[in-house]
Image (cartoon, rainbow, N blue to C red; front, top):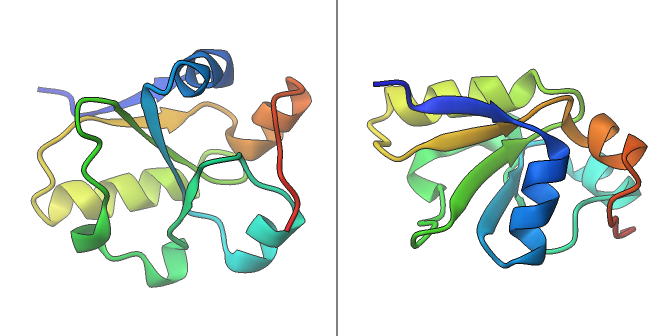
Length: 107
């Protein structure tokens, strides 16, 4: 069974607006400080611990990074460590999120 899927920023934004997503940002702290998705959880890939993946409690678990590559590495680490839930990867990462004009927080 496939466990990791790409999802568009628009779909993720709709889930976020409806409180149906747990969004994990795997970029580094300096990138987070520049701008991030409101309500996201910072789990930098450099210190990523699959044991710390939050329980989405029935919501969509979304990983994202800057462009869509590092979130795949984080998803792979989660699956390799035994995480059995579904992980959604944001297509195009934060760059695509910002290009679509969706909400951002600074700092």
